[in-house]
Length: 271
Length: 88
Image 1 (cartoon, chains in turn cyan, red):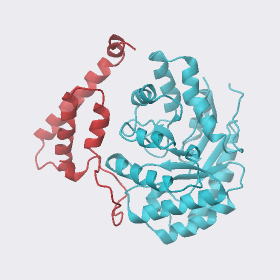
Image 2: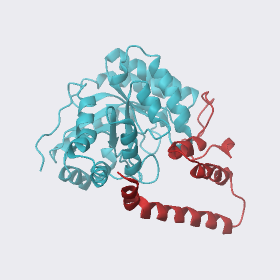
Image 3: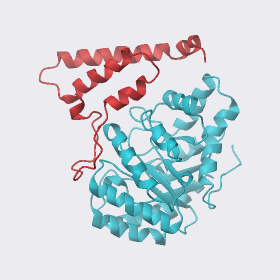
């Protein structure tokens, strides 16, 4: 089995997780910028975080032979403070040429507020001006439907970014069509207690086809499972999906999307 | 997969989850105090399970979702609670 983990917050994980990913056939790991679990006190905190994502974490992953990529932004959970967001956004262009930066993400909404929406628009403009791929976080639980609609409207009003260069992450049964029908890619996040189980993710693949879908663990400092992607592959095997269909969902599809950034290369030598 | 294969693969898991849900409702019932809007929202969402068709997961999620369309004035919390107050 081979797979790409397209969404994992590895700065929050231990080295055993890197070993487990590699032993399970992981060919590359991609890390969107995220909320630390607490609000950073200044833009300097983000500068340090971006250095961690582009300098330290690739070295840590590299010790396990695993390519590490990242996405940069100020996360929606910290987007209520527009002035801070403006300061953080002004830092990002200086990092975009670094070799492991794939684009702008995970941007989006959290509580669907006016300021979050304004900061989302600022991020989308930044991505458009710099020709970047976009990875979008959709809100949690009761806020997801409304937030996904608001995000879709912002993105559809931005003609400079083609929909196939945007992935809407954390979709569930009530939002997956909103993403796919607008021409975006869609990510299904495999969590034990929220978002999506393996069984439900495969149901959505069965219903909507795998043309523009991927799965990810979004493992972070909370309850999450770094090996959720290979475990979903096993679930697909139990349900009779072919090896080719499994490979398409967990390896070929993320490779197709992420390769739109010419910097993205996978490790083809598996243990 | 055939219906038989789906049942063979997932029935025990669904049975366990159903009993867990029933036990949760019993636990809430036994506990003192008043339940907040989430219990009523859950009960309302559960009515979707008895409806025919193959859209139950989507309809349960819709039932628990904020149906409004305009951005809120400001975010006063970061967390979501799983149900929308007016949905109850």
